[in-house]
Image (cartoon, rainbow, N blue to C red; front, top):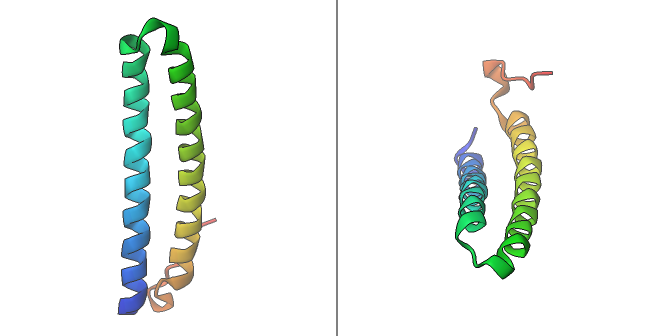
Length: 85
């Protein structure tokens, strides 16, 4: 893998790590909101946060699979790195 490809992989991994951290943090905040939020807004707030969390989780999974496939395409072929089935 050349230096340019390694740099691109580093950036892709960084974006994925940030997005996964956002999903985990949002899940924790959702649980906290369930107990702390004011009564009239509690259900609406928790539902909105759960929808946002689901969207981010699905988006993360899609990007993770794309990055994994990209990595297998750009891996060194001489080392025998092939995409597992």
